[in-house]
Image (tube, rainbow, N blue to C red; front, side):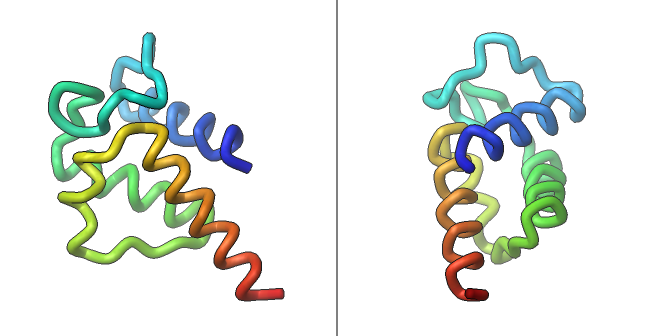
Length: 88
């Protein structure tokens, strides 16, 4: 599941016109990494919510900016797995 989510995140970043060349799991989403501004982080969060049926809390956006691509992907995978096990 994690590789699929990572591919989706990278695809969305590319769709949002961010340079994804050289992007790896240690690249931060915020400053000194992908350099997503708060509006772009919100856009990415909404895209992930729509695709995977998740909800991010309003106060999570600052935390997301500090995450690496790998941490973000793992968090989404964990939440998807948790939601799936909650529904079974």
